[in-house]
Image (cartoon, rainbow, N blue to C red; front, side, top):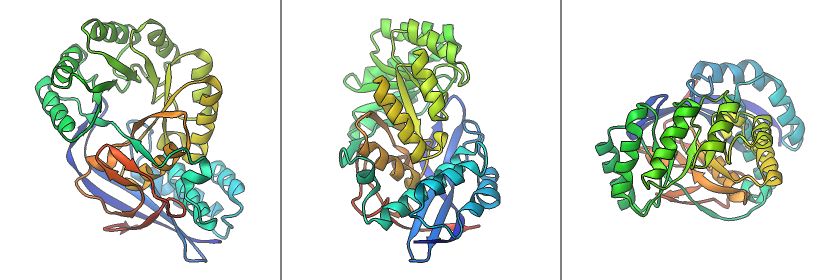
Amino acid sequence: MKITEVRLGMISVPLIVPFKTALRTVNSVEDVVIEIHTDTGHVGYGEAPPTGAITGDTTGAIIGAINDHIKKVLIGREIDDFENLIKDMNGSIVKNTSAKAAVDIALWDLYGQLYKIPVYKMLGGSRKSIETDITISVNSPDEMARDAVSAINRGYKCLKVKVGSNPELDVARLAAVREVAPDALIRIDANQAWSPKQAVRILNQMQEKGLDIEFVEQPVKAHDFEGLRYVTQNSYVPVMADESVFSPMDALKIMQMGAADLINIKLMKCGGITNALKIASAAEVYGVECMIGCMLEAKISVNAAVHFACAKQIITKVDLDGPVLCSEDPIIGGAVFNEKDITVSDEPGLGIKGIEKIRYI
C-alpha cells in the first residue's frame, strides 16, 4: 500500500449554540481535512481545527505545514514502513501539532486498513464503548443553569462547566448549575483564566459551599508549571493539566513535579495518536489517570480519539462532545455518537467512509 496523493479540503459545520470559553467564542467548526490516497484505492482521513488561541495553529498554517513540508516526506512511501513514516513526518517541521495530528491520524487509519483491523484493537482493545461529558459554555448563571437542565434532560450524567471569563461570577455560575443538577458529576474548566492564588481562593470557596467539583482543568497559564503545582498542593479540588501538555515531555515533567493530579490528552495538542500513546504510557508508570479531550472538532479527529480511548484503561475520563455540539454530521462512518454514549466502529482502520460537503483546496 503506497501513498500516491495527499489532498486537503475544508469542512464547515454550524454549532447548535455558540461555544464560549474564557479564551474564545466559536459559532461553527471550520476544519482542515486531509485525505491520504494510496495505490490500492484505500484512503486515510485526518482533521485539524485552527485553534490559534490555544495551539497557535491557524487554517493557513495547517495547510502550509502539510503542503510545504509534511507532504514531501509522504509521497511514494509504503504504509508498512509505518514507524519511519511517522518519524519523518514529525521531523519535517517543528511544532505545528494540529497539522501533524491530522496526518498521524490518517496514517493510523491506513495502517489499520492495511492489516484489516480497527485501530482501537491495534492499540489495546480495552472496550467498545465510552461515555462523554457535555460542555456548558460560560454565560450568565441563569443561562448556564438552563443549559445544564437541557443536558440532564438529554441523559448526560457529567457536565463540564466553563468558567473564568469573570472570576467574581464563577462561584455563582457553579452554584446555579449545581442547584438544577444536584446529582450530576460536575467538572470545571478555567482555560488558564486565573492566577495561582486566585484559583486556590475560588476553588476552595466552591468546595466550602458544597458545590462538589470533581476536578478543575488548567486553572492557570499554560507555561506556569510552578503555579499549577501551587494550586494542586493548596486546592481542595483536584487539578487537571490541559493546555500545559503539548508533548510527552510536558506530561512527564508535570508528573515528575507533582504539578497536577490528572492529565488531559488532546490529539491536536500532542500531535496525534503516536504521541498520545507515549503520554498514556508515562501516565501508567506514574499512576496518573488521564482524560481524552477534543478542541471542538468534527467527527474525523474525535473518532480517532474514541479509538485511542477505547484502547487504553488509563483513560478514565472522556470529554469528546464535539460532534454532538454540531448541528449536522457530514462524516460518513466512524464511531456512533448517541448523546453521551459513544460506540467505536469495528471497521478496519478508523472506519471513516467519506465526507459530505467537503471543499477541496
